[in-house]
Image (cartoon, rainbow, N blue to C red; front, side, top):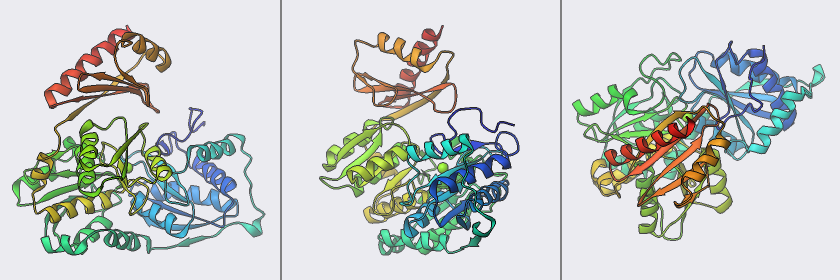
Length: 451
Ligand code: MG
């Protein structure tokens, strides 16, 4: 069985597939061998989220790594950013077994660099080259790696976050928090962090359950109805939810309203960045963050879409903060990767310090909304792009990623998906109706071009 049909194995966020269907244990072991053959290091850390196939895939990858002579340290179930923090702390490579927010039948393999960021594209390509050539550096029996366990990673990760924030101010506020782990990898770490911050905490779905029986893993409003109802019916300052591997955090305001990730990022930038700081975000985030940067005197740098791209850019230019519109915030004071628990701690900090409610804070931000669509395409992206360029030749166009077309004070971004035959369409408007109308208009244009 050919495990993955595409030439490239690593997508924007690692390898993904359904174990025993298109992600076999034999394939996972060969990926382990490829990783070990390429890195040729003494030790590699490995961790997993709560998925039922986590043990199986992790064991296969670890076995492949050990066959090349590298030893493996198994950190157990952890949020992806906790593994990343461990890699950064000990200056070692890591492998995360996760499919992030995908449905429970999926799993995946993602490589972490020694500085804690996602592995650079050229290194992923090199690992793939080893895989496709099958030129594994398999060791003599006497030099094979061994397996060790380290269960300290979760505690040191939480302790690190506590050191980066004003824990005294947050603790004094005794905030009332409802937290939903969605049965995912954050089921222990985020409750531990919130308890250490003296919050009045009620938890939801904080049992590790790889079937994700309580809600779907993607933290979008339609999957968070239990948390939203809980916040609405109780007396809470904030609701918090993560995706399956907890590199993202989303928030529910005290009235039970879902807060867009775009707004969370802008809010954190507003209260954290100072004059002269650099802020990085992809072209898909709204102009809310551009306006906030102007107000604070920070300089905004826009990149292509993808958390690893934002992280690398932040390191290159020594940026202070960065992130995406989906709830992934990267705070340089902690580490150069998306981190759900760190994001939650920053939001608690700004509520506690401002003595305002989260809805008041959000209400003070510039008003923009984003409408997002996924449109199935029947033509290759290159052809479609040519037609789009011809169609919009009279308009102001940005080609940082896909094509971004200026529409008065707003814009529409159309970019191909890296993994599926779809294009992603983002439309910015001044309110929901406005962005929706713009998205509909461009979706219709796209469908017409494809005919
Ligand atoms: Mg994730």
